[in-house]
Amino acid sequence: MLCYEDEGSWSLSFSGAGFLGLYHVGVTRCLSERAPHLLQGARRFYGSSSGALNAVSIIAGKSVDFCCSHLLGMVKHVEQLSLGIFHPAFAPIEHIRQQLQDSLPSNIHILASQRLGISLTHWPDGHNIIVTSFTTREEVIQALVCSLYFPFYCGTIPPEFRGERYIDGALSNNLPFADCPSIITVSPFHGTVDICPQSTSASMHELNAFNASFQISTKNFFLGFTSLIPPSPEVVADHCRQGYLDALRFLERRGLTKEPVLWMLVSKEPPAPADGSQNAGHDRGQEGGLSLDWAVPNVLVKDVCDFEQLSPELEAALKKACVRDPSTWARFCRSGLGRALTYLLLPCTLPFEYIYFRSRRLAAWLPDVPADLWWMQGMLQSVALEVYSRSKDQLLRLVR
Image 1 (tube, rainbow, N blue to C red):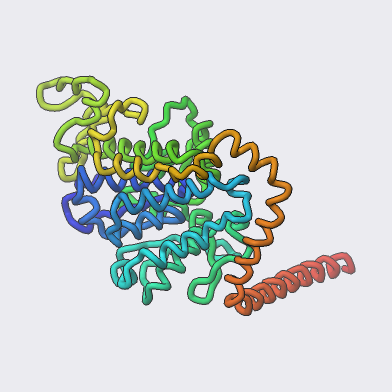
Image 2 (cartoon, rainbow, N blue to C red):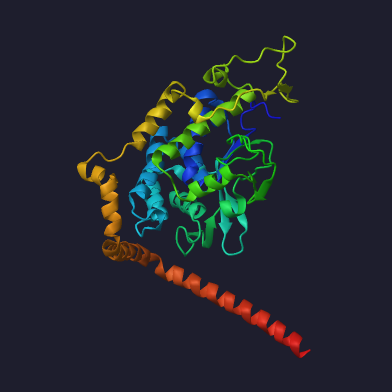
């Protein structure tokens, strides 16, 4: 068991989470406030999909206000679309690519090399690779885009990285090095990782897929649904707050905080030591004297009356990011009458919106047309050769 004292002896791994990526922001904020040495002394930050975005934001030194505003900004954008993620204006990869181009520092490839690990899935064989070295800023951006690219949800032609096609890293390795004892793992899904929501379900069944463990429960099903189809910004913000609380529980169970904050939140006194020296719920670790206190309560967001007392900066950032456009037209569009008119006019407006946004995508795609067409030709040839080879083998067997 790690004592987290020898700098560089541990790393952090963030799972893919889709729109629940704000959970990672809450975890990161808690670690930076309550145990900053866990971030400062970490050897490397691994991530797949939205977890990779959080990892690169740590390395780039982005503020919590920046992370909340950008992630919740995308949630609010989907909320404004009449058909949500099915609207032709929904283009997550283009949106994120532009944000990365605008916000990442010019030397991010130097900062990220040997500090950032991005999980990618090679297309079409599905092999996983973890990229840890980058020669240019554009390589960092392209690796992140590939790790975020969920097939058909984000498009039909996988993006390119170093001459090869890659898709969402979560499809082959959702939680890099999940079984390594020196890795602090983080996931917004109920399971057995280090920092995750603690389940209250009686289900003992687990699904081991994509190098990650998920508890088979109704809550995880809805979390998976939420990761692809976001609810309101306020609900997503609550997942961020829950990430903060789960990270705090992780720290308190390992004795890495100065005071039992979670006990005070639930208005309880910490259990008295059974023998005057150690709690009955304490298990003493084998290395470095690190203890695990399983009596630390599991606190939910609904149990916290005033989250601002826990983390004023995080709460201020979330409230600011959840604010909608206050203009009269925007308020009318959000009203019941405005939404009713939007859906009534949809048969008239949708064809024009489809043509407009598809034309914009086509114009943006033109520079990549030769490379993409060449790739599609190669894919069709390989498929045709595979079909021909199998058909030939079957015919030969019939003749014999």
